[in-house]
Structures are given as C-alpha cells and as structure tokens.
Image (cartoon, rainbow, N blue to C red; front, side):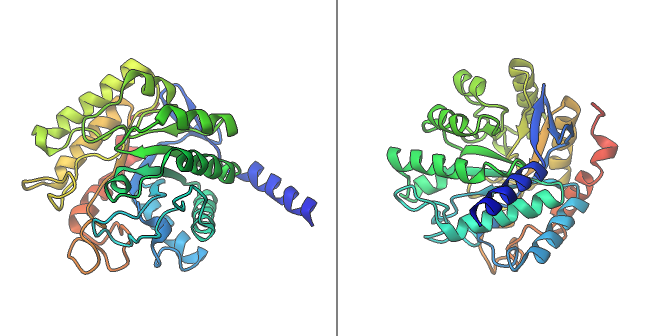
Length: 326
C-alpha cells in the first residue's frame, strides 16, 4: 500500500503543471504564461467555493473566461477587520506552527483543481493583518510553519509562495528555509504598503517581485504605478507583478478617499502590460463583510457581480488583444 501511494504521488508530481521563470517572463510547462491574477484571499475558507471539485472548477472556468489564470490566496485569514469568511481558526497554522489538517486538505484541493485547468495559485504565507490582530507567530513557530507548508506543497508545481502580505519580517530567513527544502519553488514577497518597492537584499534574493504599487493618495496612480514597475524591471531584470494595485470601494484598508472609475484600473493595467509586467486585479468584494453591497452573497469575487469590476475584467479578458507579444 505504501509503495502504491508513493508511486501515485510521483505520477501526480510529474503531471503537475510547473511554473518557472525565463528572464522577466513566466512559463508554465515551458510555455509563456501571461500571469493574470485576482484577489481571492478567502478562497481556502469560503464555503461556496469549496462545496465540491465540480463547483470549484466551474468558478475557476468563469475566472478564466475573464482572463484570470491565477488566484491570490492567503494562508492566514484570521484578522479582526470583519472581512468575509474571516474567523479565529481561519489559518493554515496553529499558534505553535503546526499545520491545520482540514485547511491543508482544502488548499490541496484548490491547487489540484487549478492545475487541472492550467491555472496557478499564489499562496501568501503570512499577513500583516494577522500581526495587527495579535496572532503573529513567534520565530520558532513561523520557522516550523514555513518548513511544514513547503514540504507539503512540494508535489504542486503550479503554486508559488509570497512570504508576506505587506510586511518583511525575516523574509530572507524564510526564503532560505523554502529553498533548502524545495530549491525550485518560486518565492516572492510583498514588502510593505503601497509604493514600498522592497530593499535591495530582499529583491535580489526573491525569484520575482510583487510590490503593492502606488494608490490614489499619489493622485494619478495609473502613471506612478507603471513607473514603479518599470524601475523594478530595469534594475532587477526579473518578472514584476503589480500585485495589489489601486482599487475602488471602501476608503478603509488603504482604499480610495475619492470617486474612482474603471478606466483608472484599465489604464494602469494596460500600461503595466506594455512594460512587460503582470497584474493581480484587486477589489473590494470581501472587505466590508457579508450583507453589504460590495460583497457577493457567495463571498466569491464573482466577475459579474459588480458592473464596476465587470468592466475592468472584460478588459482583462481581452489580454491577448492588448498585451504585447513577447
């Protein structure tokens, strides 16, 4: 029985789509992969998305119809901000760094279904929102958690790790741990809030860069953010993803204080594409909680729920038309 299980895991690993890098480009199974994501931080903890594999793949196909081939998913969804699906136990980790088996199973299911459809998962290991909530893992627990999730995810090659959301605690230590256990695992980090582009040591150590670029406080973010992406591409010569760009919605949590328009996001995305960068579309479809106008009843960032988001995603769906050929 044990030998059969090992053989099945080996076959699964061989069949898994593998995300790699060539210069400033992503490849999936050796072919150009135009990484295009959406914020779905609560994916592991959302009941509607996880009823069964059939329903989950139905949602994934819908994302694909709107040009989305990558889901940005968080391991820690235990903040106290009132986000949809957040809860005290909504974390892959126990306080001592052990993995929660039920959430790990769910993550594996998500990653496997994504692989079946040729999609990629961005897993954010730690979040500053969890630190804010007083649930920050200590050094020993964090090291244990990183080692454990790295080992468990080793067969899944259509997944990359983002060490932190908007934080930089011991990033180089965690990169070292991950690479020691899985040298081919792609690792990145979101070093801080908007326009924090990371320090040189961190940016040199990471496989590619995922900064949170300038938001509305700078004014014309659709001009400033692409300039930040251009700078990083030129300086580090590795892929750069505009990972949590300016958005519409609640002014809380770094959101806009003034009126926004879909064209703000569309112009920014178009310019990032022209530079050779990639994007993860950010939105407000989880931030104000269930029962509020911005959040779909399912808690899933449905591309068709909001006319605002649908306009942006209809543009993203035309990626083949507007992204330069490389």
